[in-house]
Structure formats: C-alpha cells, structure tokens
Length: 441
Image 1 (tube, rainbow, N blue to C red):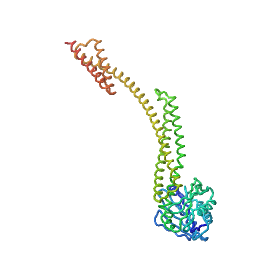
Image 2 (cartoon, one colour):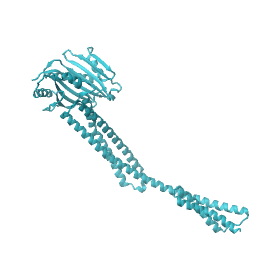
Image 3 (cartoon, one colour):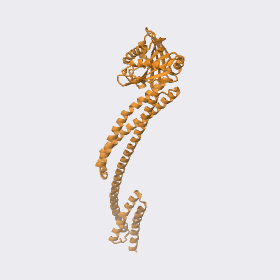
C-alpha cells in the first residue's frame, strides 16, 4: 500500500448572509474560536476574511478560514495530522471534526449553514498506483454512511479525485443541509503548489467551484416547488376563466363584476409566481456561468462535474420552457380582460348615448319654448304682426330639434351631420325673421 502523508479532513460550510445578520446571531467563526480555547492564533488581513489555527493535545492541528463572498459566508474548518499516517486516521479525524461541528452548532447564537462540502486529503509518494490509492479510498468510503461503491477515480491536473456522493447533514435543524463529499490524493512533488493555488485559497480554486456549484444546485432544487406553486395558480386562473366564459352573457357583463374581480386576483397570484420563476432563472444562469468559468480556470474537466453541468443545464431549459408556457397563459388572460373591458366600454358608450339623447330632448323643449317666447315678445313690442301659428310651430320645432342635435353630433365627432343640423337650426331662425318681415311689408 502506498504511504499517505499529512492527511487532512476539511469541512467547507456555507451560510446565508441574511441568517448571519439576524438578531441574536453572530459571525460563524466566533463560536469555533471560543471552543478552541486560549492556544488559538488568529489573523485578520481585512474586515471580510480571517484565519485561525490551534493545536490539540493528540497532535492534531486545526485551521479555520473565513471569508465573505458576495451574499455568502464561507467557513472552512480543517483537521490534519503531520507526517506519514495510516489510512484509518481519516476516520478518526472525521469523527473529531464532526464532534467539533456539532458542539459549535449547538451554540444558540450560531447561524445554520445551508450547504457543506467534506474533503478528505492526503499526499502520496511518486509512483503510487491508482488501484492501490482507490483501495485506500474504498476503505475510507466504507466508514462513511451513504457512500455507494464502487467509486470512480477522476484524474485531474492536481492529482487523483474520488467523488464520494452527496447527502444530508444533521448540522442544520430548521432546513435540510445538502452536503457533498470528495477525496483528493496529491503527489508529493506537486502538493505545495496544489495547496497554494487550488486547495487553500478561498477566493479561487476548488472553494469557488464548490461555492457556485452549491448555489446552482440549490437554485435548481427550488425549481420544483416554485413550479408546483405556479401550476396551482395556473389551474385556478384557467378554471375561473372557463367558468366565467361559460356562464357570463357579455351583454350583461356588468352584472358579473365579482367573477371578474376574482379572475384579476388570481391573475395577480399567477404573475407573482411567474416573476419568482424569472428571478430564479436569472440567478441560476448567473451562478451557472460563474461555476463554468471557474471550472475552466482550474481545468477541472471531470465526469462528475460534467454530470452536474448537464443537470443544471436541464434545469435552465425547463425553467425557460415553463416561463414560455406561463407567458402564453398571461397573454390569454390579458386578452380575456381586454374583451371584458371592451364590452364594458361599449356598454358605457351606449349608456352615454342614451343620456345624451335624453339631454337633447330636454334641451330641445327648452329651446322650443324660449324661441317662441322671444319671437312673440319681440314682435308684439314693436307693434308688428306675427306669422300664422302653424308656421311659428314648425320653425320653433326645427330650431328645437336641430340645435341640440347638432351640438350632440359635434360632441360625438360626427362633424358633417353636426354641421348640417346646426345649419338647419340657424336656417329656422333666419326664416322666422324673413316670414315676419314679409307679413308686415
């Protein structure tokens, strides 16, 4: 069996910034440092990153690294043994790390992580055979619940990698904590360089690949629940529209206002779900793009990452398909509401015409009385004779009908008809004057 040097077990924990900012919660690294005791050494190069190291009596070394990456707190806790060690040491360190994480998470002020990655690492001598290394990893996998065998080794530019599957962790009580597992064995001659550029940095390398992969998978897992809510809203909206179409007489649509208001409320619920899915799609695209960019930077083209990339791509395509269907439903709902508004507008227009006709009649009666009164008074005061009563009634009726009718037609933009009506009204006044002059000449 090949020798293993400097074995290490690492827990990479991801925390939502919103959870850390809740009242009563603290920065995720504080509880770890308090549990470590007085022998801890801490460094704070800047306000958004930190490193702490301490030693255990058993010889184990512990290292804590923390950084704020956008809206996520990245916390990495590692336990390591120096020198050459047997493969069984991984199980011992894994149990010790689990005890530390459980003790820290029991602290009331400690926020809960939403995702985690467990990494098992060691160095090996030049010339180690892949089969022998796989046998060591198979022994490790046998001590981890939920790991399916046989395992598939994935050669990389940095060394050998074994995906150990994924599962849930009991560290979070209020949410299901998704945890990925993997093992890395790096040749001794490459180990220092691999640590410096790939494994240790929090702002690049494996940590950033895991960050954006976790974010993408987390968003993809939300798709089904959001899709289910949107489907429920769609069914309720379409059922309401179908019931309304079958039961409502559009000539009497004003009597069905409660049903129309119910459709509007359900449409708002549906649009809110559609907007939530659009936000999910945009976030998934952005994080997937970052994930693929970091994979390209580190040249980590492994079968396991190809599987994850295909899964995320299918989620994006399904989201796009769901949104296209949702847009079709939205368009049909808008068309339904447009029909309803058009019918209501026509009803109001007809009501306006009836009111205008009634006002025209009243105005005509007033004009008729005033026209005859003014004609009689003007002629009687001057001592002249009036035309015959029949002629006066006819001319008064013409003025009473065509003056208000012309005004109404102009208001309704019937320009030619309005002009002709007003002309006849003016002509009635002119004829009254002409006939009065003729009778008295």
